[in-house]
Length: 340
Image (cartoon, rainbow, N blue to C red; front, top):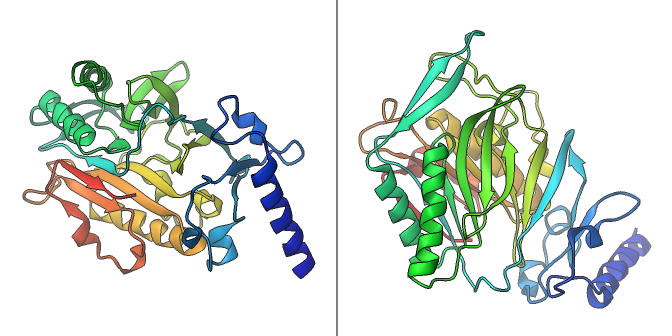
């Protein structure tokens, strides 16, 4: 075992110090990090990462010292990496968790007795989106997250317009990434609950679909096709996995596929009530205990089901989620910055 550990550390260090492809290499491509035999993605850690972040941690939480290893698939789901080059985007930290006031989701029942979203109503949607983006950019946030089933095509167009407008008119550096909620979208073979990852200019980087359908308060099932992959955003500083609501919940007799991913944190747009956030909290605690990864969940609550002045819940990437009471995560604020 000692001999094997020494060999792993030697390969880890040699690759890190001699490889010609890292985040500082403008010609470095994701496939340059792909292991030809196992198809694992060997992601270099930032060169300036403090040693204190790595030393003294159990092996499962630390992984290799100089790299993160991303498997090609977990639980039958493909891992799809999305790289974002930050060299021209400036130094930013924090993530904005954005909610809506008095949001109500309109749905219709499908022939199978399930449901699909039709539209949303909320207080001053355009003004709220503009405020979210303004505060996020003025606060030097790296990213913004909107909740599940709150960003329909009209809201998404407004987000893209506002991002471009602020960069041009205010001469500001763009955000690093944007997770523009999700929406039910029709495909040639049925509906999907689809989220979009955008860059700071509002350009689409990746779409991904919810894997596990939810039930509404009437017991109807989301009438959607399941997604087939988990997106992992890789920046110069962070490795970020993304999921949609029910995907990142504790489910009886089902092992979460996120428990084996060596990422810095998870970002989860969600919609639901206290029981939904409690399920997120349970998975966040299990993931943190297993790998050390943290979780940011931005969960909208339909105003018809919310308590007074409650907009939703925000799980703010805590270091110790196991000790948190779910009621403490209720949010009355439309916008808040969460520290990475």
